[in-house]
Image (cartoon, rainbow, N blue to C red):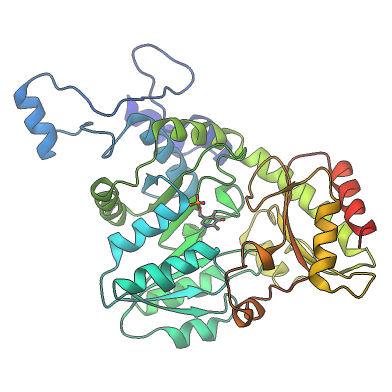
Length: 403
Ligand SMILES: *Cc1c(COP(=O)(O)O)cnc(C)c1O
C-alpha cells in the first residue's frame, strides 16, 4: 500500500510532490504530517530489539539514526530533487561537513569554487586542511581553471550556482563531464535555487547539499541542512551523521516539510520581486552596476535561462556616492537610510534583507582575496523577500536619496 502511494507520487509533478510526498498516514488518520519528538523507540521483545540493532529488521532504534518526521522530509525532498536518497543534518554547514567526512580521506584533493559561502570556504581551507585534505580554489565560471586544478588525487569538485553575491552562473553540464572524465564527484550547493528553480542532478551533478535554513524554511525560523544523492553515497553520509551526531531535530524537519509545500510559489514570488527591483536599480544614475542573472546585461544570463527555471531572489549592486567620503561611506549611508528591509546577513526569508558584504559576510577575507572575489566597498547585497515590490522600491529610493 505504501509502495503504491510512493510510486504514484513519483509520477506526479513537483508541486504535487512538494505537498504530498513522503507521508504515510499513521493509524490515527492525521491529515497533516506528525512530529515524532522522541529520542528512542521501544521493541516488542528482546529478539526484536536484537534484530533491529543488527539491522536484520528495518525500523527505528534511536533518533540520532532515524526518525519518522525526518524520513518524511528526506523522502519528499529526494523526490523533488530527483535523488535516490537524502540525509537531513543540523545545519547547512553540517551537510557539507558530512559529505566531506563521509566521502573523502586524508591525502585527497578537492577543487572548490572561489565564490562559495564564506564558511564553506573556511571549512575547506582551514578545517579539512588539518586532516590533510587539500583544496584548490578556482573561478566558478572558468572551466579551464577547473580542468587545470584537477590532479591525480582530486576526488571532488564543489560549487554553488548562482554565486553569492555576484550571481555568476556555473555550467553544471560541462563541469559534470569534467568530473566524470576524472572520476570525481561533482557536489552542488543548491541553496540559492532549490529544486523549484534548478535540478543539479539532472545536469549531471552527483551530490546536492542544502542549507534548509534559507529558502526551504523560507521564514527564518530553523537551522538545518540536507545532503542528496545516490543510495550508496547517502548510506556513507548517514553512517557519518549517525556516528558523529549532526542530526536534524524532528521539529525542524517538520518546519522544513511545511516549507516545501509553498516552496515553488514562494520562489516564483522571490524571482518576480527581485527582477523588478533589479530592473529599477539598473535605471538609477547613482547605481553603477547591478548583478542579477535575470538582467540581459549579466554575463550568466543565457546559461541561467537554460539551466534554471527562474533567476532567484538574491542580487547585488554598486552605488556611487555624491561626496568624496569614499565607497564604504556611501554604501553604509544607503543601507542606514532604508526603513523596511532588515539589515542582516541571512537570506531566503519572506523578509527582504540587506547587507554590506565587504565589511560583514566577506569581512574576514584579505584585501587581495576580496578584490579577487569582486567584493568592492561600494557593493550592497539584497536578498529580496515577499513584501510588495512597491514598498521595496520606495525603500531603495530612501537609500539612493542618502547617497
Ligand atoms: C547559509 C549557507 C550555508 C550554510 O548553511 P547553515 O544552515 O547556515 O549552516 C551554506 N551554503 C550556502 C549557499 C548558504 O547560503
